Amino acid sequence: MATSVAGESRAQFSSKIGFILAAAGSAVGLGNIWGFPTQAASNGGGAFLLIYLFMVFLLGYPLLVAELAIGRYSQANPIKSSGAIMPKGLAGSGRALAVVGLITASCILSFYAILAGWLLGFFISPLLEIVGFTEAATWLETFSTGRNLLLMGLFMAATIYIVKSGVAEGIERWSTRLMPVLVVLFLVLIAYIMTQSGAMAGLKMFLVPDFSQVDSGMIHSAMGQAFFSLSLGACTMMVYGSYLRKDADLPKTAGQVALIDTGIAFIAGLLIMPAMFVAQNNGVKIFDEAGNLESSGDLVFEVLPAMFETMGGAGLLVSIIFFALMVIAALTSSISLLEVPVSTASEELNLPRSTSSWLIGGVISVLSVAIIFNFGWLFDAVIVASTEYAQPILGVVFALLVGWVWKRDGLLSELRQGAPEMETSLFWKIWPWYVRVVCPAMLLFVFLS
Ligand code: PFF
Image (cartoon, rainbow, N blue to C red):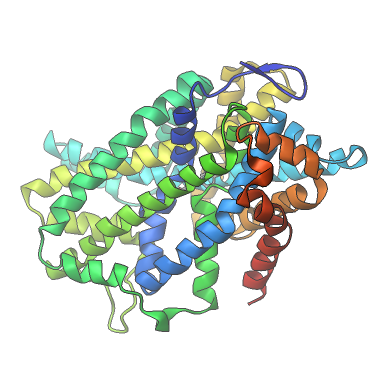
């Protein structure tokens, strides 16, 4: 337990590794395994990979340190945290900003649960097929309002269940269990896919950059992907930072999280890009005549199951493993999203954690239901508003607060707690002005171009 700015005792991650796995669990999700490979495949493979790496380390990483620092400084929910670093008269606007963050996290969860529900369906479906429930299996894989509602509800219930169990018992325990399983499952699948003919063409596309594909749209996509993947600008990292022990070295910890996140995206690319070409080799149409990816959004849901089918008996097993992996990754992200409003409601309204988990999880589920009933226009609109606008803008606003508003002494003493040499480090020479000037300028440049 630790004491927050408000003087309350508060839960903490029980170990540094527990924190790293939980934060990496938040970062690693559908964005890595589905979003990144799909974007790379439709944006020139290796060229997208390079620009993405640039965005993660030169824009995302400094902002990740900023968000974690705000949370850890106050050891409180985002509303208190954002208020705490503001000068007295401006605390209200800090809190208002956090409210926007809470809404952003809730909106992301509302569409994320629908997507993750589909993955859950693709995971359960082959199991049903094995026991002979073929019709139910097909139903789970076919788009319908009923299926979307059922699977979203199941996924949301699992998310609520973990979050209501608290930080160490729920989030940390499950992230620590699930993250290593994820990596092992991935490696097994990569080893398998590399033995298949066609895999090398995919590998080449992923690793050899085609710079003719670089344009401003691609750079914007790479930036959005980096914000989404690192879970920035939605207060999740602020909340996780608030549970982080004071003796943890923030820049180092953030670096480890960013490396794990990027490593998993890279590994996902190593699996999915070769898998696409293996599927193509087996007669599945992946690129149209113009060389564009067919139904890029549906890559995981159409192209991959088609590939698994061509693998014969083993395909069923591979498909179960693959979708289990996706559900696990999605779950460690969705719990971080739900934690944002739940921790705030528990602390600000003095509600027991289980009540606020069910209450807020319920409200977000209603939002998901609204999206499912208005899928045609609302699904994309919520994704674009929350991930392409709210996340980058909030991420940079938090950086501006850290760079311009938070008193330099206070910031230094916060960072120094886990890194006594901070004042003389290279990090401290560069980072404060970097988040003040360079990060906002980069964002502005990308938006304007
Ligand atoms: N980073 C997660 C992913 O890559 O799937 C998604 C995410 C989680 C975005 C938490 C934002 C967030 F606050």
